[in-house]
Length: 354
Image 1 (cartoon, helix red, strand yellow):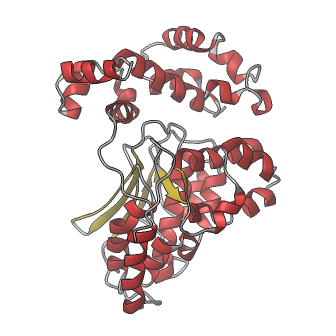
Image 2 (image 1 turned 120 degrees about the vertical axis):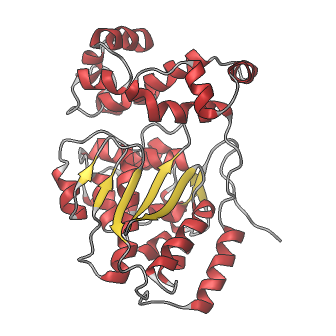
C-alpha cells in the first residue's frame, strides 16, 4: 500500500532529514534551540525521522530565525558546508551510491521532487560548462536566503564525495542580494560568487563527470530509488495562480513593478483570466504586488547592510520616498524606524509583520 506523505493542506513540504544536525549546530553557536524551533512550529525530534515531511516554509523560517537570533548572518552557508550527502537521507544515498558523478547528479535531480516540493532543479551543459540550478518557486516563501546558501553547500559536497575535499566549482550564483560578509562565501566555495542572479546555481566544468563514485552500489541504488517514490513527499501539481504570480514578481521586481499585461505575457494566461481567478480567491493583482513587496521589504530591512535606497530599487521603486510611503502604509512606521528595532525588537513582534 502506498505511504506517500504530504505536508499540511496547501503547504509544500520537505523531508525532515534536510535539517539533520540543525539543533546541535544552532546550540554550538549560542542559539536557544527551543525558542528557534518553537518559533517555527517544528519539533526537533521530527528531524530524526528520514521519511517524515515538514512544511518547507517552516524549514526555511527555521534557518532564517536561527541566523537572526544567533546574529550569525552566514549561518546557512556554514551549515551547508559541513552537511554530508548521507545526512540528506534517501536522496543523499541515491547520489553517493550512483555509478558516476554524472549519474549521481542526474539521479539526484530526478528524485528531488520526492524529497522537496515547490522547488525547481535542473542540470544543463553547454560548451564544456555545466550548471546545477536550484530555486524554490513557492511564492509564499519570501525569506529563503539561508536555504539557498545551505542547499548549494550540500550539493557541493556531492561533488567532494567523488573528487575529494579540494573540489570547487567555477562560479556560484545566488538570487539574493550580496550580504555583508560575502567574502565568506568565496572562501567556503573557493570560487567567485555572484549575487542578485535569477536563480541559485553551481557552475562547473564537465570534465570529471564520468569519474566513478567511490561508494557505487547498483543493487542498493535500485532499492533507494523505489523507496523514495514510496516514502517521500508527493511531487506537487500545478501551482495556484496566486503563487505563480508571486513567484514571477520575486524574479522581476528589480526591473520595476510589472503590469498585469506583462504578467499575463510571462505566464501565458490572458489578463481577464488572471483577474477572474484571483477574484474567485478574493484577491486582485495589485494586492498581490503589494503583499509581495511588503514581505520582501521586511526581509531586506532585517539585513542591516542593505541601504534603504538599494531596498527601494530591489522592490521596483524608482525613488526612496515612494518606498517609504508604501512601507508606512503597510506597517504604520517608516523603514528607518523598523530597522532601528522599535518594532520587532528581539523578535517579539516579527510574527505580526511576517
